Length: 167
Image (cartoon, rainbow, N blue to C red):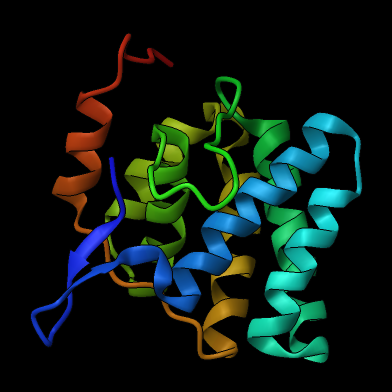
């Protein structure tokens, strides 16, 4: 899946040129890489993105919520989480579901529940949902609202999964 969309002005833009989407996607990628490698360098790269976009005080708040969300997601994931390399304009299924979860919470869509069901094991969905809500609401409080992602788009992404995950 690629990250292009047609803007209200009709131009074909990269979805990830939008600050809220970039904060979520690149934050997820960098924070996950930090957990996977044990290196703080990806975390410092995430901090730089957030600091540039939000300023130091707001970045501190947002990165704290990001850290809790990704840590919880990694601990509670039904299957090992994947991510494309930093700055890639492609999305893997886990990244789509993560973006859909945060956007769904921000917009009150059913897509959030669908994403949650496919990201976290049933016994730990509540933990992931709680951490995702804090992250999503923190971003909204900082005027960083993602574009809505319709439930049928999330369902289509899930249906293309090979092999399908059975939880």
